[in-house]
Length: 90
Image (cartoon, rainbow, N blue to C red):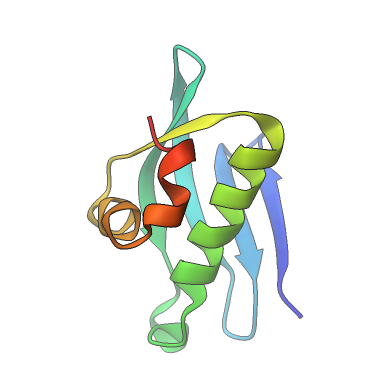
């Protein structure tokens, strides 16, 4: 079972899974969380973990009323592919 958390001390979201964890580093600017880098361990790539992580980040942002700005290429591509998440992207 995957476990998602906001590791505020490390300024990153984390998603545990077999071969994990996947993580997304972030920074904050003017109340918006900037997604700087998304990474899945090489051995676990191709299994949808990064997408599951982004989905959890979007759900967390929606629940907390937070806006996100994707800056890394994966997060930008995710935002473009998922119109249903448009409400959380600044």
